[in-house]
Image (cartoon, rainbow, N blue to C red; front, side, top):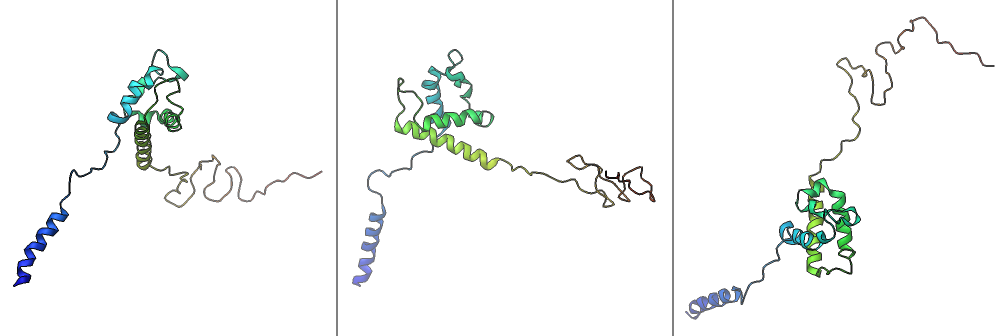
Length: 168
């Protein structure tokens, strides 16, 4: 009988111990272009890299759209290197906080990884296939003329021997 009374008490203790105390910590949100990249580009980078100044020949106002990761990959790779290594913004400008720099680098690297996963592989050299009779194609990709039938070049008769010039 004592055991029957103890079961509800033990269950109540288990439920109470399983409940979180205080605020549950949530995982930080993944970086996004609109919250972590665009504000830095728009507020910090475009002070010097705009259509009027274009320091180093770079106008970043054209890169305020996430679709530019595919069309301007080389420029984004340069931006990533500059931000990642602390070269940008320059020392005479307001520096990025550690969290701003980390979020921007994380988002750009994730965008590159996503684009690389979606990239279709290059099939490489695909040789020409023979025709229906099994003969080689008239021309292969290296533009070497191939012969059908007897294996002789056109114009040579069946009994004709190849002439080799005499050696001096």
